Length: 228
Image (tube, rainbow, N blue to C red; front, side):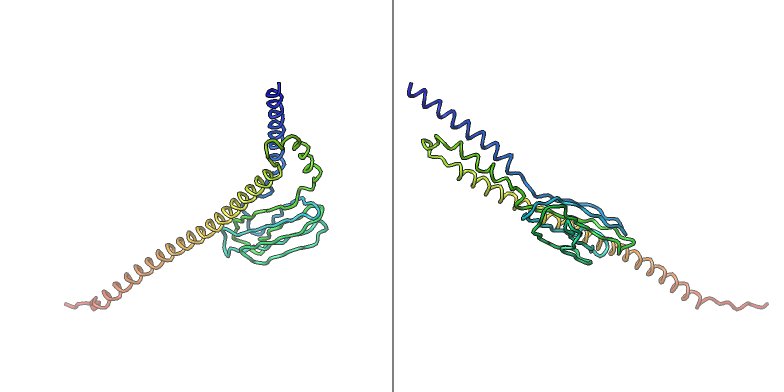
């Protein structure tokens, strides 16, 4: 009977741990996101992000393609106050300590009447979870785990640490991909310009050569009329 009782207790402990592990997986969701969009010439686009008080909003943007690789950018608070603003820049990083409400992230290309811009930006939201009561509820499952010498606090810290490192790695890779896309667009634009100017120079050289041949032949032509 003692062995059966111990097996039942172990089963209950593992069931409680697995249940809490699923809850932790649902609770520890990612708050990082990135977007790439095309901003037409003479247009302004705004994106809105709902934030909580004492949270943190970090945005990093880059102009990947378009003449000049520049754009105007500003962040507005829920009250309409402009927190940060950039003028004719190709990239930027800003961090805002937020309050309750919707923050406006606006990209402005109204200064350009011809060229559209391809823009990449990434949002990183921190301290968005204020539900601390739920964070303490899991401790009720710790009862009876002393026999296994297992600490759920350590497991949770390890899982959160691994998640944070993976999230940081994904963020760095996303930024590097954005840099690579912008550099590739610059090289392709330079390649097209070199080809166009090469064709123009070749056309001019052929035209000049034809004119020179015509002038040389005209010098040796005898235009005097022969009288008989």
